[in-house]
Amino acid sequence: MKAANEARIGDTFRHPLSKTLPETGFEQVKPLVYCGIYPEDPDDYAELNKSIFKLALTDPAVIIQKESSAALGNGYRCGFLGVLHMDVFRERLENEYNLSVLLTSPSVPYKAILRNGKEVMVENAIMAPDAAVIKHYEQPMAIATIMCPEEYSASIFQLCDARNGRVVDQEKYDKQDRYIFKFPLNEIIQDLFDKIKSATKGYGSLEYEFCGFEKANIVKLVIHLMDDPVDALSFMVPEERAHQLGKKICQRLKDNIPQHLFVVSIQAKVGGKVIAAEKIGSTGKNVTAKCYGGDYTRKKKLLDRQKEGKKRMREVGRVTVRKDTFISVFKDD
Image (cartoon, rainbow, N blue to C red; front, side):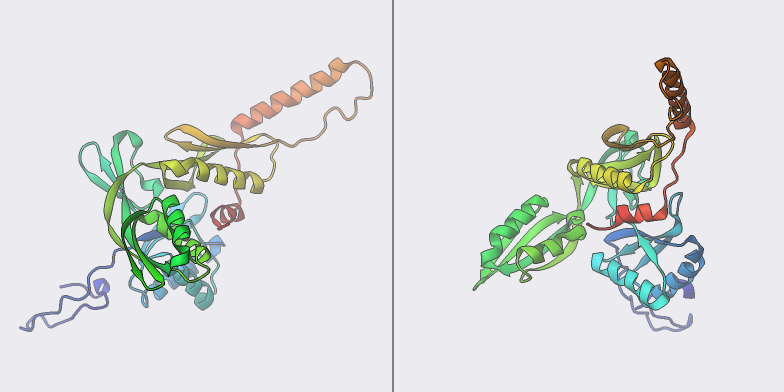
């Protein structure tokens, strides 16, 4: 018999001596989308800790686990039924409990098949096993049903093809077309619904359901600042999207990190290989400002001395990234 704190909606309580058989209850919910929830102000963590579990009492479909990040502080790793479910949960935290929270990019759980035959579920890129022990990854798939007027069918096929969608079935109903596609779940949760609405001028509809795992080329993308990996900026992505995402994040960091007294290097790496990089130039005073005329060797000596100083500073320098910088990275276009 379950303890009271293990009970969920749909479970039945009965007296141990009762001969009545208990109802089986509802099937355990399986989250399809995961993201991290962190308070924008670290001092609000205690309030978030209290509020998030209160809210979960009215939403048993949410899976909540404690999580910490060197960049974002203490927070929670939460599982949701979909992106809409995630957005509603965030809005309720902000509107009902007056909390300002930061959500990391939504992600789906991947299955890592190890060389020794074991399987490991990877819900967060930070928890991914070392690449040397991984045989391959499997990604979650979904069956999506799309309805749209027939004049938008070409746009739907073009959009779904770009998202690695495969046609499973199609039917015509008067002036409406019904298509069934098989998608990687990660392609659906990002912004597929919005793209369908835009392509069909609001007349298209989408519904989907999880249908198992398939082998896929998935890699772990890690952003490095001054050769130090940033755990909050680690992502599991399809190999063909890694360069695009890495370049986008490097550019956003370059735009939001202020100049330092040394050159700041930003790199996106996959398996130790740099696939995108940016640099933020150094700032410093003009050491030759007081040299009026005279021998150029004096200016050159001052410039060389400054150069050596910046080189030593670059070797020991560290970059502190403000939280609003992470917000700009995770914010949608």
